[in-house]
Length: 358
Image (cartoon, rainbow, N blue to C red; front, top):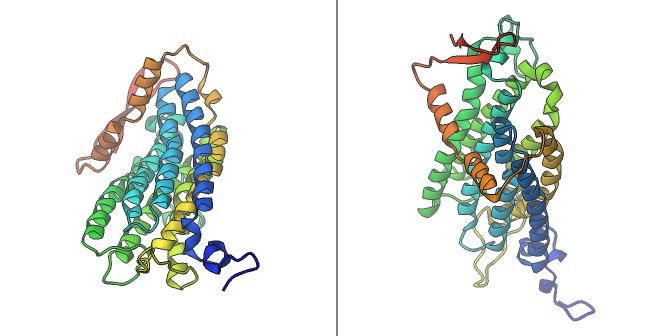
């Protein structure tokens, strides 16, 4: 069947709602690429400015790590889109991209700790105060309890477990994919997608719960740092993108999103088209995320500009991307003989004094 211009309906991939052929067009890939490269320009310029104004390394290290989510998410999603319908190559890009989620969540919590002067200062403010019961924040079961060092430890552990679970699950998914037991959107109990989604959902929900509890306990202290904008921006990038992917997989399972055939006429495997739409949407969303992160983490808030060279910028960037701190923190917080003395600055003497964790 042809239209008035003599073009067949198959030459108009956007003519059929839900058709995955749209993802294979130069228009879709070009639009996604333009959004990604615009987001890259904005974010890389912001990272460069933070490195030039690198006068508060403890805070800016976490901020720069958070900002890198835009290049990592954007580039991996765009390359995955270019490899759409190529033997599920996108899954390997997914695993690398998704592992960075855990790194970002940890660094956001670490940044909040730095804003508030460390664990010792936080405990000096909230220790012994009653925990207000709230169904919204999930503290209904903590009626009559008070804030203790164990509370802060739980918040940190809830976040760190996601940093451990995510890379392990990424490796498991790669192995299952290699042996043919993993396909995105395949909800069969004999496949790996269902169980990976359940495990990931439990882990990410626990991490979100830990962040909520921490914010609930320290929101008055964090008010000067505009935590709501920062939290909502990061949560929308990570958590909403996850649920967006699950929704698309459900829509494909319900045949709202149609499968497509490759050049050999073979239909795509389960989840391919929904994953393709997920990649396309993330590419577009990264442009908006770069603007939101630009507003949430302005480099001017770090302090004054310093005289820098390319060597100093390179050294600062190298220090920023070293994951040694997260590994040390994870080992410490999950150690069965957890015992540490944190230190806080004395406002009177300026000296360090021990503050025992019980």
